[in-house]
Length: 230
Image (tube, rainbow, N blue to C red; front, side, top):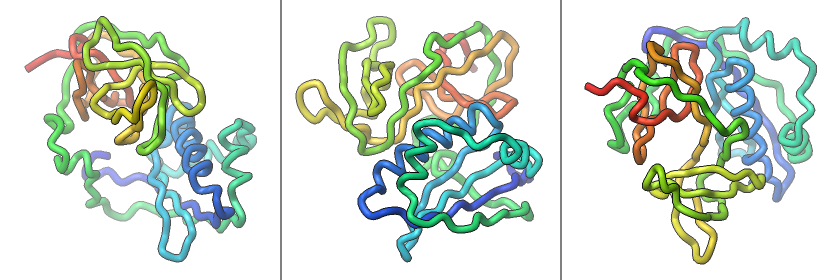
């Protein structure tokens, strides 16, 4: 989020059924990505508090966008049903009106030193995703691994925990033997459809691809060759 522009936020709180934590975390990630992709959310962070409750801090561009989602019928997806089945008690959410924002993400802090952070650039070649249902994994999850990508060195085909197949950078995987690996960080294979002249912000580069966001707040991968250099 740009400094000086403060968004609306909601804190959701739950007490989970013992032993359901991993299932809940995976389902929460799927629901959060759907909200970000389809309903204009700005993403969320999941936390576990010292008292055993679980909290998700979700950001929105404004209260109106959040209220538009609340007005829709409740989603009936496998991920949303799984979340509900994991919850022992649902606590009242906290609605946070914006006042000021001095928060810096780990990525934007440069802590990991992986890119020229938040570099603005322009698209010079169109790119359209061929993967409408991208793979998504969380740090620590096991994935199946297959062949390397002959077109983009450093990428390998994986099968995520839901059975979806797609490409992932080898650098975020730690082989656990045979045809399995463990994700060393969260990963979302969403590709962004772009056209020449689109303005993007580059957040990360991995093996010939940029993780970018557009002016509408959507995130995804685009090939380096589609972006103006220098």
